[in-house]
Length: 103
Image (cartoon, rainbow, N blue to C red; front, top):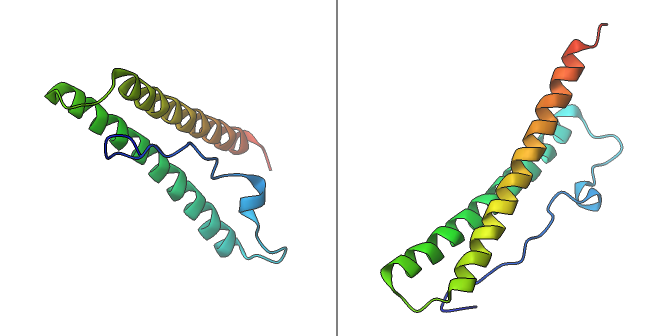
């Protein structure tokens, strides 16, 4: 905790061991599991963006916050957003490739 704001470390939420589904999972259960992982990941990105905004606002108001803390939070937010965008791009690319497959 720094100046009343906690910096949570970036965590990988989509590790293969976290995606354990039973071998006989129905498509609905698999979809529900994927949706929950996706939601958690988006929430983590949002949390890092909000934290970065809080630090930036504190710095702009002249509150007691170190510049390096603001820059670190900003970079973490930027990196998590870029990673989320890359995952999104890969998912869209995969979907488009599957749609080109002739049956």
